Length: 153
Image (cartoon, rainbow, N blue to C red; front, side, top):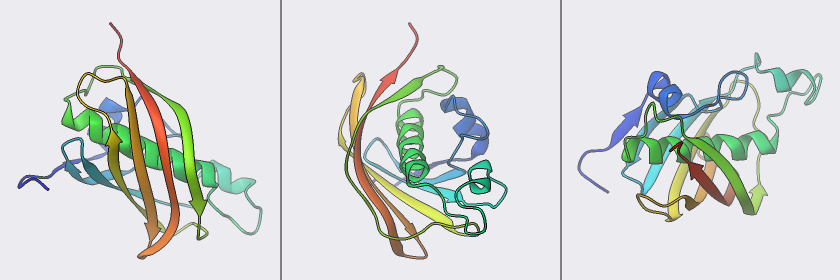
């Protein structure tokens, strides 16, 4: 780990990611170690629209949105490390592998997402990451995923 970890608040996140409500799924990235690793935070709120139907009376954060939150955290990590704010970057999933869900994520939880880069470097379009999401130190989800980062010419 480097001596100086960086972070990203919601204003910087919105300058990097194209996502907006209701699909912006990371609130803060509190530790960014270059393109090597990051720790992101998602505060899960009952006000999120997916809880109306998933499931009425028993709100559970959909697994696909947990994976998406991890992917958005990795994009913020790369965006901060490579100074991509305001560059109108788009990010596309290419694959999701070895994905496992271990715990329900419900309103009131704080999802802490630890991302590490498995493959990718400055100038590369295709990156591979490993993500682990926890609530109160308990594993909720883990996955590896590949994404393409596309910057306009």
